[in-house]
Image (cartoon, rainbow, N blue to C red; front, side, top):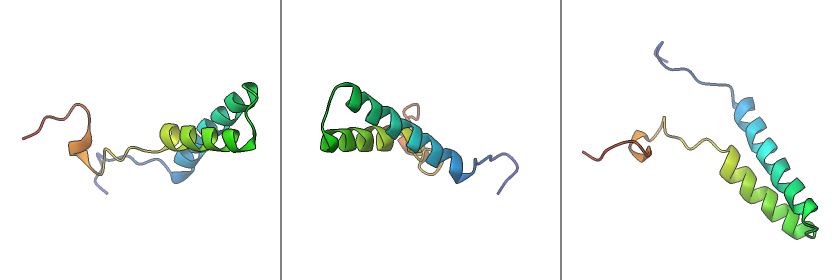
Length: 68
C-alpha cells in the first residue's frame, strides 16, 4: 500500500452500517410498522447509508469524475 493511501479498518464500515440500520429500525418503530416493515426499512437504510460506495476501487464512478 503506497504511503498516500489510507484505509480504515473494516470495523468502522460495519459500525456505520449497523448505525444506519438501527436508525432505520427506530424510524419504523416510531411509525408503528410491523416487524417486516421495520426489518426492510432497517435493511434499506443500513445498506444505503452505511456501505462504502467503493470510489477508491472504481474512481470513474465518482460523481465528480469526468469521462475521458
